[in-house]
Image (tube, helix red, strand yellow):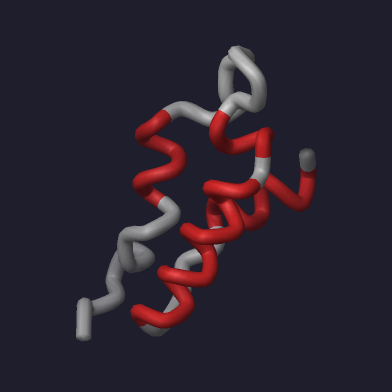
Length: 59
């Protein structure tokens, strides 16, 4: 769970990093809820992990 929380909070610096992070998260039951289960993270938490950190400009 600690690793999942760190990944959720991690903000990739490149679009390739975003794609890699998203691909991993889609394969991991802790993010998508597994077989009929609820995910451990809210949509807001997941989406925030793909946004630039505050104070960073998008490039």
